[in-house]
Length: 627
Ligand code: ADP
Ligand code: MG
Image 1: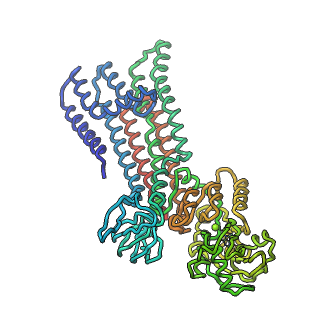
Image 2: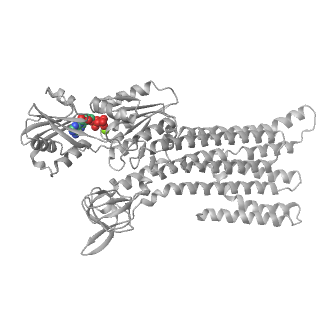
Image 3: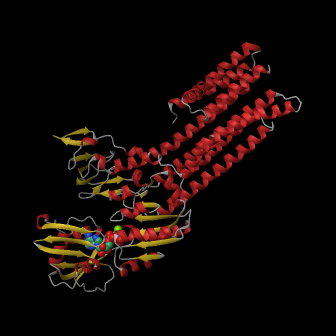
């Protein structure tokens, strides 16, 4: 796809080329020739000249427009003064420059589109059924709890729960996952998926602005505004560079002929002036200025196509330097879907214990709580529960039917001064105290994510030196998971603030230039997510806190995407450096050749556009994920 502006520039390029070819055969001399050549020159260069003039007016003198303007105007003046009438060069320089610009805007547009393919997930309307008729409304106006209808082929506009119908959903735009997801009554559906087969009625659970789709779009839109250090380097570089080359060009125009004159030799002022102008044309740092941000942009696009949202180029850069990866256990390395595998040492009837715990946990959003609710099987009667307190990393305390129920780990029992009886099953143990007396425990066990082991191995292959697991769970459960997965180090029984301290300790031992990534599910580890060099969140599908605190989001909780993202980031950085070295190298070479008179303006602009085209093509490789 080509935009209207690009079409216009293309027409100007072609017209100029045709005009130049025609002028070749026109035997004009003097003023007439100058005027004839000014026509294609102004046609192809008027916008550059205008921008250069505006730049001067606004005090931002030294940019590439200025370089092109002064060099080409200078070339005209020179050809007039020395009587050669060779205006072709000035026009051609402008022409090549515009060809380069056109190519660049085409390439940028292309990579931007591949990011904004994601923008396709933006829903335009929601259907509300009234009196048997569907009405299209602005999704922003739909109140939470409204029932909306999503027909086959339509996008889900707002997060909700299926209340009627069954269908398969295409989540590819969100997660990069091509296998459709089946949903039926009771399932949660996130916005941005496409409904493929059946008619669905959803009861919305969030407002549009709070829905997954809006959050993701916000992230994507803001991603390219966070600059990496390489990009910062380039813009700082450009700020010093342009004035420096202008000064060098001035010196080149004045110093050698002046010296020659003083030495009493013939100075040939126009020759040195020409070299200075050619030097200016050559110095244009387009290839760098364009290809570096483009590489990052393409890298972000490539990652998002894989279902990995990277919130800025700085994080892509950081990802490429990750040597330590710290994982949270529950919900990250494990599924966070617990099965109740036993109720032990209970003085109360087992059902009664389950009921108390389920009620006490009814307000918690911890995965353990959700699993207990499932095992309990009934809708908890919340009127029986008061004074709920959740102790992050420990458990909950609540009053149920007037009795104080505490449910949580050993540490919670210690805090309450209740002696907990040990349990020999491996798993997460939820000890329960009723009115300050020990009342037994429930054993729940989690399963590790199927891809976790492979992902850890691939991380090592991708250059990660150390993997660490942090958990608030008891030591046997932690050791079991760690041994199963092959994690290098384990720390158990940690409260959320202990996790921050652990990560800080790891960070302070870290050699310069290396980075630490923390991968968590956002359930009480948001502080660690923001403390790590790169916070990576699982469960973009669920936890809002995670999306907000993280720098990178694995959209579909697939741990395999992590080594993939690191490989992609590394390759992107390699490409960035290739371009920097290549562009600066060729530039320095051309500048030297021009300064000694071994290359003319033609060659200079040709080299410049050529390098830029190659650098841009190289940058576009960042879009593809390495295998
Ligand atoms: P992890 O560090 O593995 O992600 P958490 O920090 O979320 O685990 O929780 C640590 C431990 O605290 C859990 O293993 C559990 O024993 C206890 N715990 C936390 N929240 C709850 C809860 N809502 N109900 C019962 N136990 C809980
Ligand atoms: Mg957790």
